[in-house]
View (cartoon, rainbow, N blue to C red):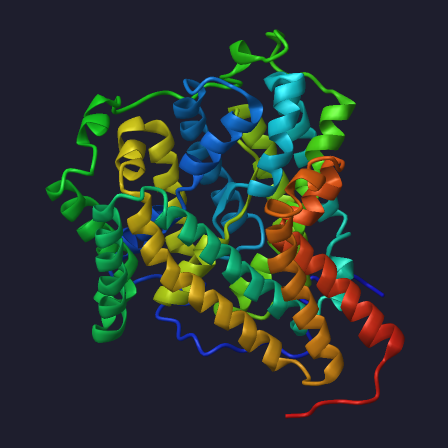
Length: 459
């Protein structure tokens, strides 16, 4: 059968009740609205501040590395997002540091040093680009019907909620909780009691009003860090060559062990992106096509290669941005491109980046909790758009159950045992989205394609 890039992934397009204010191929009528919408995206998608610190801890590196890596990650976000939205699947997808690849690259860096990490990042990006351009991922579309995709999207909502809760409890002083609660309530009021620009920009308004203005009044916004940061700094290729754990000072080293260990993270990233693409299409009222998968994965590979040269963490699609689209109704690809330019500015201007870093995480988390709930329910709606029967109920239920509870077990009661497993098995047991896709695809094949149950629960 000839390859058809416009072939739909699903026989029936999933539907959601989310109303769009600006479609994927549309632009806001006023330029200042575009700026506000784009800025709003950057306020939620600024996890380089979190992932850079986590990576440094995993790799056993000094804290002095963190500010440089934050800037490098912002540059990689801007470049990766522009590649994806212009040349890739052309969806409003924000590319950012991948938590899945991060957890794989941390031990690689600790053992083999930064040059080996760069080699693993670059080769991993090349392999991901090859997978996309050869259409390997797009050929599995029949194994990911709406019931599987819906389970993945709902799981993404759970992951988004976990991120929001983690941010919410970053600082446990009473004033932080009070301001977070006020920001949460303000976000709801802005979203449901107002219309137009105020409703669409409820995340930006709530975060700035409480996270900057109110936080400054109560003395918990650190303006001294903003003042101390330089306004402009040029990027540097391979900026960490002097921080090699193994003592090597070369630009890049290609180690087979490092490449294999690092690519386990890429596998999880690819599966995670499949769910993000499907969710973006469902929320954006766009038919999810085979080309979205193939071009998207290829573009992510190119973005990861660029990340390796910049000394940044590899990039993948960002679940947070799906929440912004669901909550605000702004799905414009053009707005996402403007946000990409802002990410580049953050990378070139440490002062701008520091202004975002100083917004208390708890306040951002409380507002982001609203968007996480919207993602969860949009996933449930996608599940319900598929045929209702016992088989599909088991597919979705098992996928979501394993995806939410297996990582919890791995982080609590089973933590000591999980640490004794090889890196790839650890990835399987700790990556929610990877588990959801893997379990959903397996259950769909075994139940709906092999067993083919006759009994149904029609509703």
